[in-house]
Length: 299
Image (tube, rainbow, N blue to C red; front, side, top):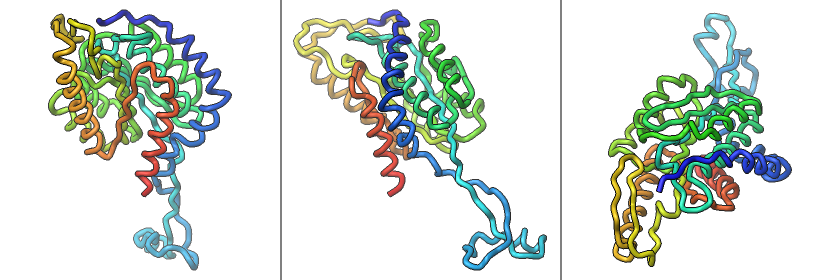
């Protein structure tokens, strides 16, 4: 059953950050996790006169003719990244079979990522979405930005509504002109048949990764619970089923769905990480996820 969002999140996030500041985030996140995307962009900086030993392919012959001397291009690596957290606030995120709602666990993930990226010197922005973009905070630097992001994702009024990732990506293409990286945090429940098409279009401008937040009940039924009520988060429809009868078909359907999501991201050379609500070692899994992506990109 969908529950009301209880903003008990903020004290837990603050506690997390106090601990993380002493160990994991300050040492590992800041130094390593976004190194996957560092230095991948190359920008023109200036011209200088050719010297013996320079790479001849860097000579700009048109500029050399104008200046009447041989000039080579100087390039610099982009050191900072625009990271935009695309955060699902739809009805289906207001579900939890345990201590946390998906929304609360997802907010902890978003807080961890934004804190790590900001500490690394990158600009971080936030998009909350349901049936389209609800909130758009442009990427900015500094830990004050982290407090702004927390104030939004920790507010119960932020949550609720339908789900339309297609429309969200289309609107984001118009709203965000600079290149960067999108981190989509969602349960990806309610995708359209053509969602991957919109993902491919957005990939023309952005690096894209996904973090799939699932409650245990999103993935498997309690096998010996007898009759169970399933509820559509985007309508009033309910269905009573026998868990023993539908345990296996339900599990197979979810595996097929999760695999389709994974394949959708792979088609755009992206990645998706699956995390279950309440998972204690999610920081480790985030680090392993980005480290694996770094190795894949640089091989």
